[in-house]
Amino acid sequence: MNEFEKALNQELYYAADLELFKMRIKCKEKCFEYNNTNPAEIKKLDKLIRNIFASVGNNCIVEQPFHCDYGINISSGDNLFINYNCVILDCNKVTFGNNVFIAPNCGFYTAGHPIDYKTRNTNIEYAKPINIQDNVWLGANVCVLPGVTIGNGCVIGAGSVVKNDIPPNSLAYGNPCVVIKKINQ
Image 1 (cartoon, rainbow, N blue to C red):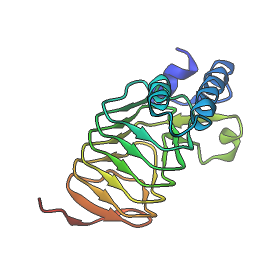
Image 2 (image 1 turned 120 degrees about the vertical axis):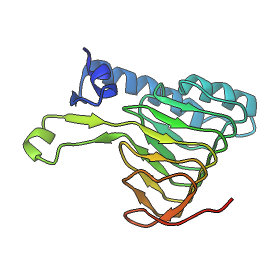
Image 3 (image 1 turned 135 degrees about the vertical axis):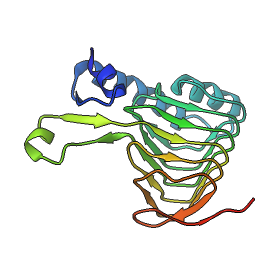
Image 4 (image 1 turned 180 degrees about the horizontal axis):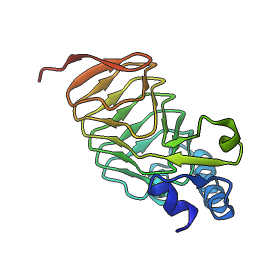
């Protein structure tokens, strides 16, 4: 099993692996082209983001600048809107459902590191998937940590650090992010 497969299997893997490095460089080149394309070239931007992500639904808008590690681990449904300065460390799968709205400066971080510094200093890390379900709105500066699922219909308040799953139809915010109330439809 190679290091990329280990990451997807949520096993410890060697993040400085040469093949992983080459994959990240390839993705950085794609992000560089995306971020340096004239914003008025909507069709070109759509084509470029489809070349970065594993899959993209209809009506996907990703504002520039945008950064990710691999791209091939990111998928979205229809009507995804990602505002400025989004960072996705997609060492594992990051899935966005339909009708997901992401405010500026949000981050999605699948990667984590051992707390023991001797192990951490060997460039060993782990990655857990992130799943953002349908009809979710994340406010500005939200940070989503490894292994989190945010359920259908949720609203996550600005500045939140989401370290645990959020059940469907919840208004949640804070650091750590906690459910404040259920959203009545």
